[in-house]
Amino acid sequence: MQDLQVSVEHTAGLERRMRVNVPAARVEEAFNARLRSVGRTASIRGYRPGRIPDKVLRQRFGDQVRQEVVQAIVEESYSEAVVREKLRPAAMPRIEPEALEQGSDLSYTAVFEVYPEITLTGLEALSVEQPEAAFDDGDLDFVVQSLRRQRAHWHTVARPARTGDRVTVDFQGTLNGQPMEGGSGEEVPVVLGEGRMIADFERQLEGLEAGGERSFTVKFPADYPNSNLAGQQAEFHVRARDVAEQHLPEVDADFVRGFGIESGAVDEFHAEVRRNMTNEFAGRSRNEVKRQLLDQVLAANPVALPEVLVEQEAAGLQADAMRNLGINDPRQGPDRSSFRPTAERRVRLGLLIGEIIRNEKISVDRERVRQRIDEVAAGYSQPEEVRRVYQTNRDLLVQVENAVLEEQVIDWLIGRARASAKPMTFRALVGG
Image 1 (cartoon, helix red, strand yellow):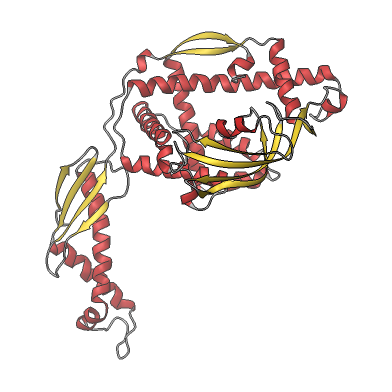
Image 2 (cartoon, rainbow, N blue to C red; image 1 turned 180 degrees about the vertical axis):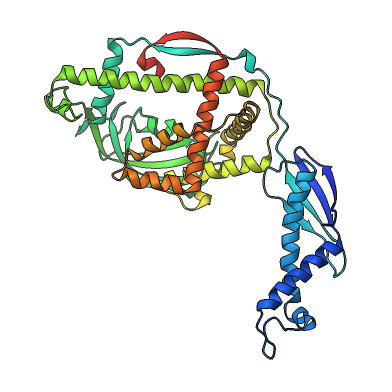
């Protein structure tokens, strides 16, 4: 096979411009071979398949075959060139072709970003504070109160709304005198103090009574996800349909049976709550250790990021957010730039974790993959079918394998880190 001519130019950051020249002889050899292949099966009136003259084949199929051959040679020579130059492209290239005349060399320029060269540092200095369960009576009360709030009921009250009340409102927002997209709603329940609405908006609802109306200005935070609204002031007109007060159920036999304790015994319920607290504490404790370790790895290893990977990650986060919000029109969704900090962190962590995997030759634990799939399948009515789907769907299986590999890296980091115990109550760990 004729040799390629390859030259690589380092441009801004991680971008590379690689010019590739494929000898004309290689192009013509591939073209003739492809044309002969077409001729064996082509159907042209007046000629038997396999007996079509070369001149006729070129007239009928030449342009199409040449396009196919050029595309195939570009793909083949690109792969050959990046291997020869020891490059690691972070994504597919942008191909800038040059005019190709029959009998001439095939030349093109491939523009792409490469993965950064990484030399890991700071791993010998890792240290963590391992949360250690130190439960008290306040923890039990904290969890029971949370469970009571989940089963709360609301009673309409004839008084002004205050913190903790649920106010059901109709509202209309305007920005610069024009109606805001997505800035109106009917019968929207707002629990004052819950923080699910913008603080300015929620605060203005205090003091409203059922049937009352109010107009006010709301200042959107500078980091508001929708960049069209971030930092802007909008006018809202609100009408309260209803003000309701929260009533928590008593912790009695009926309440306890609602959590699967058939006896209705409160002491059994408390024992079950403590068991669940222990399990949740263990999971959250590991997540806290993981956060500490990854924060230290990130701080010790600043890495240049391929812009293409950051953009892909931000686009995925934006799509997830729009799906969760039920938004189909990107113009109404949160601006992609608001996801960049998270995207950059994820890409940087992915690169560093990948480097640890390569350096330490960590291979995926098949037993842990099986256990992870079993855990997912257990939540479905037909677990065997779910297992079969994961085992036969390569994309789903890769997702599980990547998650398991990440946990194996965390185990490896934990094994290297200096650890000290930090006694904590349950409510302190979960942010209560």
